[in-house]
Amino acid sequence: MDRYELRCEDYSLTTDHTDLQTAFAKLFQAHSTIDAVRAAEATGFDEALWKQLIATGATSMAVSEAEGGDGATLVDLTLIAEEVGRSLAPVPWIDHVVSARLLARLGALSGDDEIISGSRILALDAAGSNGAAGKRLVAQAAIADEIIVREGDDVVRLSFSDKPVRVENIGKLPMAWVDPAAADSRTAIASGPEAVRAFELAVDEWRLLTASALVGLLEATMRIAAEFAVNRYTLGVPIASLQGVSHPLANIAITVESGRNLARKAAWFLENEPDARAELASAAYVFMTDEAAKSAIVAVHTQGGLGVSTEAAATAYLTRARGWPLAGGDPARAAVRVAQLASAREVAARENAEASA
Image 1 (cartoon, rainbow, N blue to C red):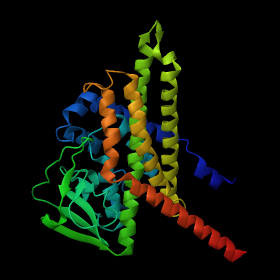
Image 2 (cartoon, helix red, strand yellow; image 1 turned 90 degrees about the vertical axis):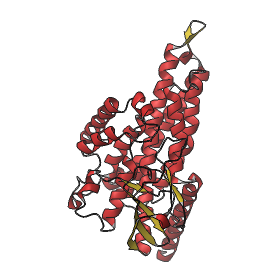
Image 3 (tube, one colour; image 1 turned 120 degrees about the horizontal axis):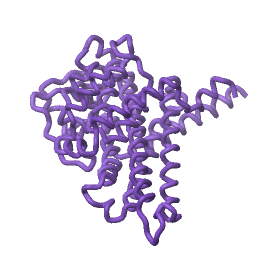
Image 4 (cartoon, rainbow, N blue to C red; image 1 turned 45 degrees about the vertical axis):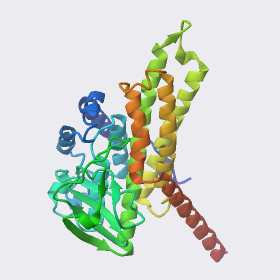
């Protein structure tokens, strides 16, 4: 295997990667405690934490230097997304950075410092990749200054003088119904096949970063359960010594590492060879959407009655493990996309092989 191929399979982090993740881990540990997360549940948004992220450049780093950002790679962004999930941070970071990258891709961002910095918040209709018209639920719509949607072959920016009203949801997101026809401002920023492809790429990036957030979320949930199992005794021994407890927790650890490696591989290909393995981002999302909820339930059950109490941190992680992925609509649609892309690639490879034979 040559060095180029080896790079495609190498998910190890550089010192810069590790320093970046450590810095954001410390920030979220200090400013996104479980008490702060609980306090923000009524709105789904912690404005003070968002201002902290703006100050650190977490919002501008996702945009290229040519557009006024810091030019972070998708691998860099997956590391921050992990920390967002680990801390259950109630901020629209994933939606905003993905939307900003989409605007840059379509030539509609240059010079807009408020969006690049995060002072104006963007929301993405991640569930609307099929371009259907009409009302739709958008995850960050209740706090967003602008909402990016797809209608047919058009990519459209919407704004409302009165922001849509938040609806209660299991993920505790600032989710709201959005009716493009009722928007006070509606601007079609691009149209046609290229615009559709750009929007689909943005949805792929959203799925990738959401998968990474679920990796961090699940790892934190596992640690909560493992700490409880080590300190909880029955018949004179810690319950962690019982195979019925330790083996399911070990399975969660396997899920965490599998999801992390898949997300990093997807990030590398999406950044460097977006057409070579286009299905990987959706595959990571489908895998973590399914596994995160199941594993979070195991972690809750490990704590018995404490785990299912509303005060328990594990409960907060479980509800978000179930609710966050739904912001992208039915995960089965992502699974269908995985099958379609993988099948198309294999068919093309077979046809090329036959043509060259």
